[in-house]
Image: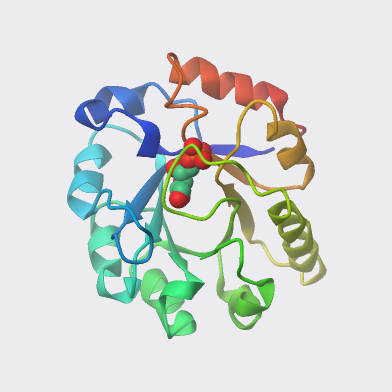
Length: 216
Ligand code: DX5
Ligand code: ZN
């Protein structure tokens, strides 16, 4: 069964408590952290995540789009993250970083930009809980999905099956009502959606419409 992770990037930041309550039927809450260096945008930090933590039981899927994420793993773990995902392009010591995340009691994810090859994570695959395939260049909500990235999902899913590993594969960026069916056909486990949920007048309804369209 495909799971959904609404991204609060497109939510009303002045009203996060109510916004989060609107997607309680989701599986995760996707939290986009941007530092204005790894990506050309700045968003939230551990303080905001800690504040939202009090208002929902959803699992927190924290997506760090920051340089040298090793500096902040403890902070994001203590803020209440369940999964912490780092970009392989943002660190020099990926293997060490993954174990830093696990040592904090969180599940460890690695994200790949559209231009990054899957070979970059081969050496850490068996250490991972999640692989996040970016289907847009990270930094902003509301961008168009790059269709070529869907092949990466099929390839990594097959590799995971061959190695008999239990790693979830997540897709992030540009997913909407028109393409969610094709996206789900790739075998992806978790779908992130920002503008297709929080950009809509009724986010709860938008989420259930997306769910209805997926092939499980
Ligand atoms: C983009 C972020 C995404 C973003 C997705 O850099 O990582 O999580 O919120 O937004 P949509 O679904 O609008 O493309
Ligand atoms: Zn994200």
